[in-house]
Image 1 (cartoon, rainbow, N blue to C red):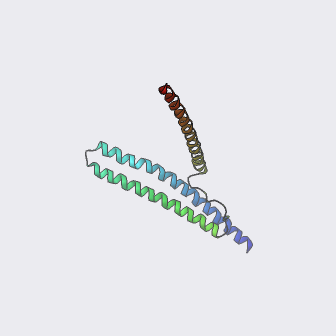
Image 2: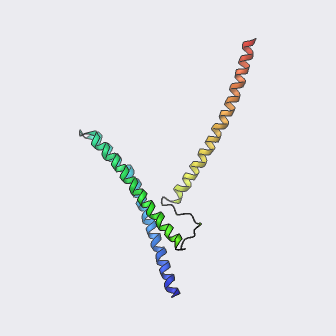
Image 3: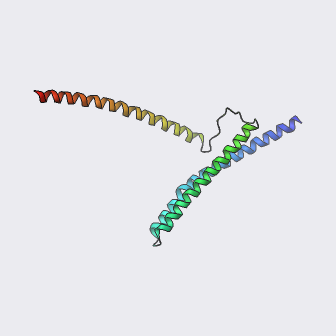
Amino acid sequence: MGKEKEIVYEKFLELQQQVHLKNQKKIRVGLKVNILLPLVFLIISFVSDRSKLVFLVLWIVSLFGIAFYLLYVEYMDFKLQEQLMEFGIMEKEAEAQALIGNEVVQGMADINNARKEVEKDIKDFRKEFKKEIKSDIRTMGGKLKK
């Protein structure tokens, strides 16, 4: 009986990993389509003599459709991971696996860190600049008094 549960557990875990990998591929394809399909509509609208409004509407509808598709894939993967946590297969403290890959998540974290550093540098530069302007105003004021 214990051996059967272990086999079912391993098969379920393997199935989840396969579904997760398929979802990652779906996200990659969705992102590529998100770039290419609107470009196709845009190119067709400029090349053809037909109404630009039709292609604009198709472009907007395609963007919404692709966005909803990507949201659906992400939501279904999130729900699958939530069920694994509920069944005790994944630890509850464990963070859900990202569909777009750890490189992208790490890249976004690096971008956020760089943004914070740039904001800090800008604030420091503003402080220095204000100090310099105040000292310039004082020296100009002193020269004007003379």
